[in-house]
Amino acid sequence: EPEVTQTPSHQVTQMGQEVILRCVPISNHLYFYWYRQILGQKVEFLVSFYNNEISEKSEIFDDQFSVERPDGSNFTLKIRSTKLEDSAMYFCASGGSESNQPQHFGDGTRLSIL
Amino acid sequence: AQSVAQPEDQVNVAEGNPLTVKCTYSVSGNPYLFWYVQYPNRGLQFLLKYITGDNLVKGSYGFEAEFNKSQTSFHLKKPSALVSDSALYFCAVREVPSALNFGKGTSLLVTP
Image (cartoon, rainbow over all chains, first blue to last red):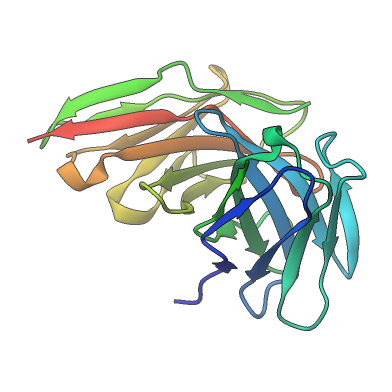
């Protein structure tokens, strides 16, 4: 069964540095998402991407964050000038041709900001 | 905004017994509801969804959920729990157009 894959599984970065989290969505999916889960808290929506543009974003997704689909397979989340509070699990998800279809999640990238 | 609530932080059940993980929702309009499961160090796995139609929805691994409009609930159920069902379970509602709004999660522990 096709899967969403995320790299790296764990990223350790100094505060103030930039990080790029990478995702390869399921190949025939059209909707792409990033979520995050701070330790002990619920999963929170960050951004969705459809037709090569952001379709919606939460208030968490401020100017520090950006997303890109640089080619036909990758979907990236860039976090500029990281802060301690950015430490979390970041999950990528993709969904099919209709927005009410289930989203399939990757195993996440654990981001640790020191 | 659409939201879901999971009133229980943890549910304990003995193997072989039926299990229920509770979820209530608050939406305007017709709800699109989902259940996901998260095993340690893994992403969320889709279990089942309710969009429209039959109130009893069957999903993966023998799980089912009952949509109850009058009680605004979407409880997850399984007739006979397995130790391997022990995991974190999330109820979610779809926001327009497509983002998922998750509950805080319920930890299910099935004991032998």
